[in-house]
Length: 127
Image 1 (cartoon, rainbow, N blue to C red):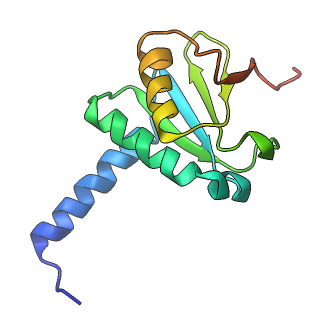
Image 2 (cartoon, rainbow, N blue to C red; image 1 turned 180 degrees about the vertical axis):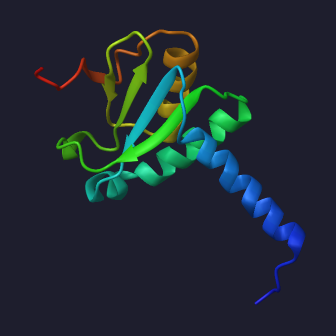
Image 3 (spheres, one colour; image 1 turned 120 degrees about the vertical axis):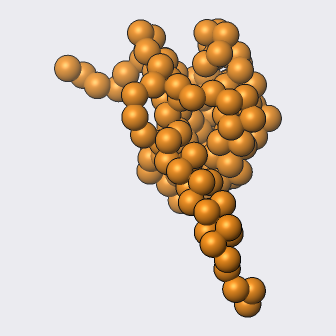
């Protein structure tokens, strides 16, 4: 195994710091990728990776990316829930890395819900 040098560790630290910034703090939008076993089996890891890469490539700083367990709709996995400040949450299903990138640009950046991928809007809360 190759020995790590200080520069290698600094690069790892910077990458983790960037990912941590995307996953916490205040932002105008939050994307939750559902990562239950059904979601992971359907490709949620690739979805999450594509989303993080696209956010970094677009240099977006005001988006939180997080994960959750199963949302209870295994047949619609992989899924993501998108919450934009001032708007009801939207659940998107049957996603691919290409679709999540389209959702990022069209819904988060331009403010347009992509109805062909959305299957639920609003909060599940009853109070």
